[in-house]
Length: 242
Image 1 (tube, one colour):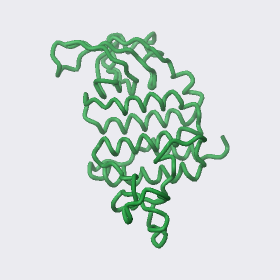
Image 2: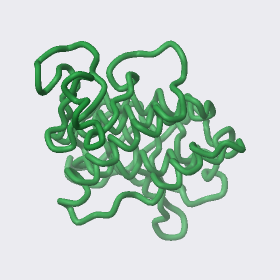
Image 3: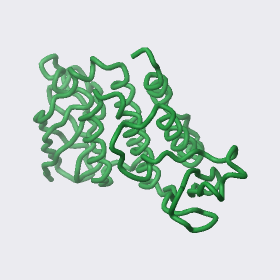
Image 4: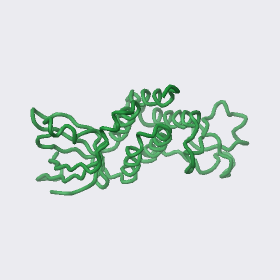
């Protein structure tokens, strides 16, 4: 068995003295692991860094085997990631989310979104928005997508300002006003593209919204805690001294 694909390194762990098991998010083969011979060496260490883009050739005798990787770095990101406190937390959190997916289950849209995020991790004003959007995509891929297209009460598509914590559906300004303290705010960037990075309070509202549904619909039913990397990422993004 053999295939070639584009991937992004999610994680690396040592295998014995000389080798490593590398976890990739690939474009066509989903989250996929494989052995890199010699991957435990110092010479390989700079290449096998979280966030690096690679061209991967995977080989195995049978499809169900772990198999081995031959990796060629196509986009080295590790050096510039180290200069930004939030980047490591973001990469760690994205990896935790993607590990909720079955291994080898293709999710090309998530791979494309991940590639966009890791290419822009240096730009702190964009990171919170991209993470919230990615979490929204994850909810949909896991079967718990939110319905933000129309008001749950009226069916209208205009002036959608809130989300119901019970239904996960959008609510318009007029319909939600009497219960606004019981609803989540719905930032515009979760519904459409925006020309400028969102305000800090909008980022906070978006992450509060997606975090609530991730915890209630995904992590709690699996008896898993929310990733600590997410809390650390949000704390770093919300700091005003950077």
